[in-house]
Length: 105
Image (cartoon, rainbow, N blue to C red; front, side):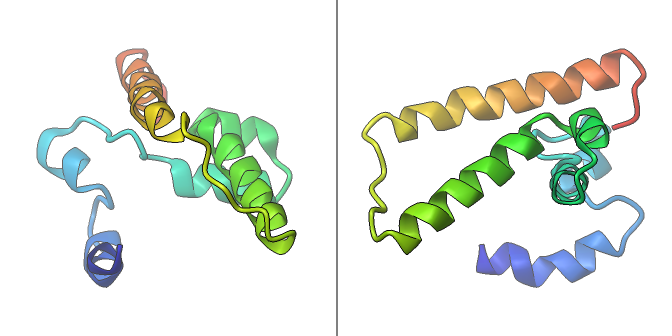
């Protein structure tokens, strides 16, 4: 994450912020997540779903982690790693659906 954070100012200020999209024209699974999370935090759920419905999921998960951390009960369930691949696949399927139907990515 530190490496990505160091590259972010270079990549984000370019014409396209996503390296996969810049090189192939295909959006990555996380395209639109920043806008989706910001929209969720501002209470604009319709815009958030338009960017990526997973923004709401990520905000809810972050709040749950903060609450569990505050209560000192942070424990990752055994099934959690198995959830990551299907979640990434669903996020990418949504982005490809938006690309195929001409919706803004």
